[in-house]
Image (tube, rainbow, N blue to C red; front, side, top):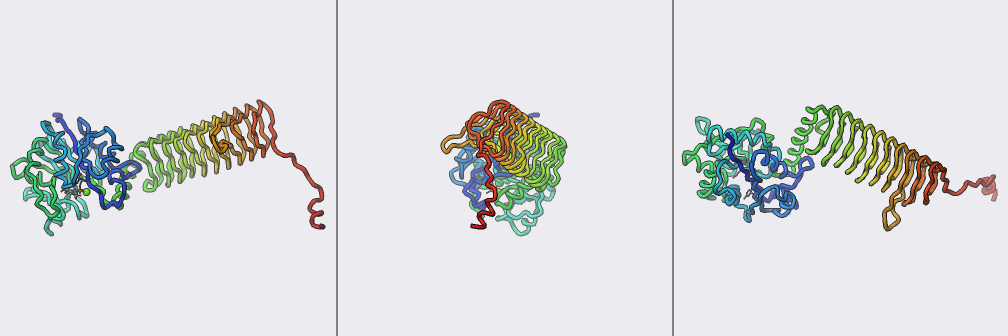
Amino acid sequence: MKKRVTTVIMAAGEGVRMKSKLPKMLHSVCGRPIIDYVVDAALDICDDAPILVVGHGAEAIKEHLGDKVRYTYQEEQLGTGHAVMMAQKYLEGMDGYVVVLAGDTPLITGKLLGDMVNHAVEHDYSCVALSAIVENPTGYGRIIRDVNGDFSCIVEHKDATSEQRQVKEINASMYCFKVQNLLESLKKLDNNNAQHEYYLTDVLKILTSENKRVGIYCADDASYIMGINTRVQLSQADKLMRLRINNCHMDNGVTIIDPENTYIGPNVHIGQDTIIYPGNVIEGDTYIGEECILYPNSRLLNARVDDKVIIQNSVVLNSQIGEETTIGPFAYIRPGSIIGGHVRIGDFVEVKNAAIGDGTKVSHLTYVGDANVGNGVNVGCGVVFVNYDGKEKHRTVVEDNAFIGCNTNLVAPVKVEQNSYIAAGSTITKTVPKGALAIARARQENKEGWVEGRNNR
Ligand code: UD1
Ligand code: CA
């Protein structure tokens, strides 16, 4: 039977141990803010917008998440129980279940939360707490079970006896409650403990004492419930997420030579039989087609790369690359570039806000800025598209099959018509007509015997 489920995400804490000006929830794991993963997992299981408890850094969090969630403000952080009290106004009169989460657990998935909810529904529990077995439980609340192995209580590390501290089953700080049971118990919470906080964990004790049934759902992989409190944990979470993302691509038919040293964001698509060497950083909404090869050490951000492209030691930002094109080594493709198919962009070439047609070659040491370059064009070594006059940027147009000799300056705005040639070393300031040869440089003059003459002076 499907039950109505809503979610509360506790995200008001300061995150002191991060030692950061940025709110903890906005720190990134694999290039995406922590809170986004938690909100996504919540959205997977709930029927309405998650309720987010905010406090520290509330403005920045609101600006980031917008109306994806409903907000409630916790002015003073008096504990996790107090945080959930702040969500009461949304929960009153509601039937069904509420899943409570912490905002600092980016590795959680909708699947695991759904399993916890199903466990609660199937056994008609008033509450199910998510737990896991960890090697080092220091700092976590411990799950204490009775002689039958049923839930007894949760003790915080700071309140635990040395015997209780031996327990390796920890509280994940994620729960599924029957809404009405939660609301009734919150009224009875106190802050009689080592930290003088209202502990949400005490709600479970209250429920048990009133003969309501509390269950435990133990996750078989503790990495899913990992919370982030420090930068060391942030890097550990990043690594776990990285491997999760990379495994998913490998399962889809992508070869990743060294998954520990390949950095792919959560919104990246990669086609089958593409091969990725170490040191690549692939970010944002990047799309990579099939049978591409990314040799080591490139960065791609919001790139669209068609099939069979080869990229090596290069940077591609907010740009498109057509099929069977090769990029690099050491190319810099800046935003707004649309590069066609079968193009060669070679070493030390910078392209900015330029369209480059199919089959064009820009092989070495060139700047192509603010230009429309046609098909089959050959751009020699050391060409500069001179796009800036000190005040404004101007565009250059190079039509199909033009040949731009080495060390040419194309001073924009300027047009090079189709099938024309430009002699090496030219500085072009006016239209080169179709089929013409333009030579725009001083003629060579040879002074015979000049060296001998100087030496005898
Ligand atoms: C909590 C649990 C502990 C569990 C651990 C798992 C309690 C009393 N303890 O401890 O059993 O093992 O999580 O990581 O619940 N928050 C608020 N307002 C507050 C206090 C906290 O919004 O007043 C938020 C924090 O921003 C954070 C989450 O609640 O996202 C957890 O709070 P935190 O202080 O980190 O709890 P722990 O001490 O880690
Ligand atoms: Ca915590």
